[in-house]
Length: 433
Image 1: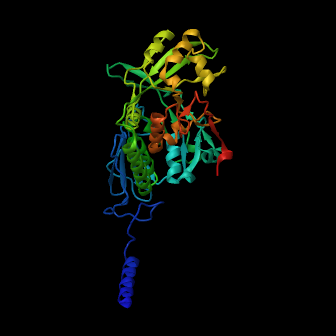
Image 2: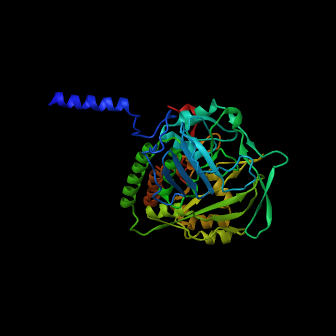
Image 3: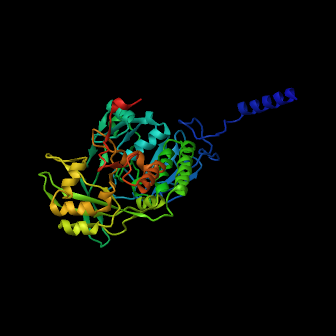
C-alpha cells in the first residue's frame, strides 16, 4: 500500500514538472508567466459591512471602488499585462475627483501618509514595504516610528504655475477653482502613497475607515489594504478574529440595562488662552453603534455652538459620560493634548457658576470624562487615528468598561479618564521591542 501511494505521488510530481505551476495562494511577488484563463487571486476578500468600499476580482485584476473618496483602483498582478478594459485617468488630467488608477501589485516600495494604513500594514506584517513617508506624517507605533526615522520624507506638490488650480463645476453649474495636489514620489521610485484623502494623481491611495458606517466596517479596511499586498488570506484571518471577539463582547455587554448617555464636547480656546465658546460635536454613525453595542446611548443631535456658558451647561446637563474633543492651543500655532486642569479651566469649572454646574453634572460626579488620546507620541500623534481605526474589538472593550464603571473607568486601552488623572502613555522609539 505504501508502495502504491509513493507511485501516485511520483506521478503527481511528474505532472507538476510538465505543466505550469498552479497558483494555490496569492503571489508575494511578480510572476514570470501569464495565462488568461487563470485566477491569479484565489485568496479574496469581500466587504460584508458598511465599510465604504467594494472589491471584485477578474483573472489577473482586482477592481476596488472607494465610495468615500470617489476613486477606483484597478490592481493587476505584477508580471502580467494590465487589463485592456481599463482606461486610467492620465497623470496630466485636470479632472477633479473620480480618478481611475491602474497599479501593479503586490506592494514592495510605498510611502505612508495615513495612520490607519500604517496600523493595517503592521498587522499584516508588511512593514518592509514602507520606503518613505510624507514630511509631516507621525505615528504612535514605536516600531513604525523607528522605521520611519531612517526613511526619506516626501513633499506634496501643488502643480506648476500653469495648472496650480483646476476648474470644475459644482451642483449649481457654477465653476470653482480647485488646487491640484500630488505626492512627490518620482525621485524615489515609489509605487504609491497611502493617504487619507483622494489626491488628483495616479499614485495615491485613500484609506478611510474613519468614515465607515459601522464598527466592523472600520475593521474591514484591513482587507482593503491587504489587497494591495496580495495578503487577502492574512486579512481574512485577522478580520475573522476581530469580528468574533467583537460579537462575543457585544453579547456579554450591558446592552439590556438602563443606558448611560454619552456626548462629545469641546471648549474653543485661542492661543492667548481666551475661550471663545463651547461646542457639542455630532457623533459619527460608527461611534454611535459602538456605544450602543456597549450599552451606552449617544447624543443624536446636530453640532451646536454656544457663547454662553450657562446655555452650554444646560445642553449637556443630562450626559452621564462626556468625551472631550478639545485641543489645547500652543502660542506659536498647533495644539497639544489637554490635561484635567486644562479642561477645568476651558469649561469654566473654576467659576462660581461653573463649580455649581460641575457638582451637578453626572459626568463630573461619576468621574466619567474621557479623551481618546491615552496612547500618544511626542510628535502629537494619537493611536485613536491609528490602531483604533482597525481593532474595533478592543475599542468596544473600552466602551463596555466605560458603561459599567461606577466611578470612571481607568483600565481602558484608548480612552483616558481625566478626572481620575490617568496619565498619557507617551510612546517613543525606545518602546519598540
